[in-house]
Length: 408
Image (cartoon, rainbow, N blue to C red; front, side):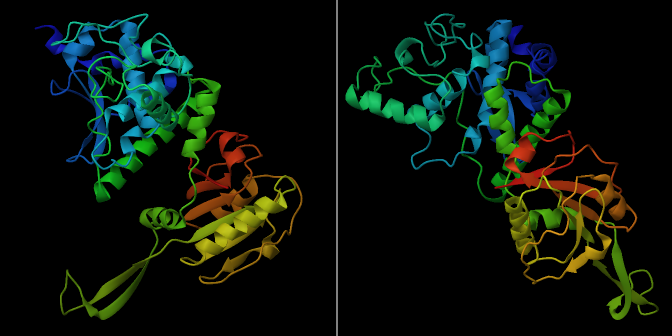
């Protein structure tokens, strides 16, 4: 059958031509044809330790172009909202959870008319006599449900609605009020990952969303994604800092190493002839602190609070700057030390000053603590990342592909 040969990968670029953000996210998510599910769904691939989009080629071949786009965006929103990462409740994910998740997505402005519903039903699926319809706020049995609410909001609303009238949904749903209504896609892969595999897959998924959002922001083209949703996505990727992860990031990619001869280590090439080498790898980290007038005392205090946390596990060099580096104020913050915040400068902001200072001194990693309110600096010779507040992360003065982390 022709329908069985439908390859979604051949159509995705065309379908997402007017949706740059979703196109960027789509490139980072594997899509695999499978007849094991009736429609589509995001599932965890335990062998590859990542989530992938499974789709039934026969189902997709029957959809209109608009509905194909809608189903794609629907699945990607399950990823964006982290529905796939929900902790699986005891007894598994129930029908009410499935419907609540779908209502949270299908009620978004950008999803309007893209999902088969009461006003525009989809194809008749095998084994069914009724056209497919998605759960959409404002339509059918959800006519009194408002749009643009969270999964948790809809779940509570469903519980309250059907607690009052268990039969209001029709059908023979066993008294839960939902009857034959259910999610149009498969949620069986949600909450399945566990342990280390789950952590790896979750990080890959979050990184995919982060990269897609940064790509859309850089081009200033999000397609149909609403302004409120853009803010929500940007807020979600501005994660809280984990200094242990930051330190691992720099150490892992450090190219520096101390090599010392030691007779206690066997030389693999010339055993018992020449002493072996003991390699002690380390990262030389620079922390530049923006002390310009636009950085408030509260933000400066928050920066020093984070540095006190970092000092419990590492030693680093502190570089105060505004338009210039205060070289007489540069110091080494020893591991285990605790310091109170201080302001030593109050001028403007120039990121070239600390970048040039670090470039000239062979550091391995450079973290800049700032409000992001200055032009983009020159390139860094070592890996550079930015620590700022929520406002600086969501509304930076310049766009960068380097990692930006927000603190409260």
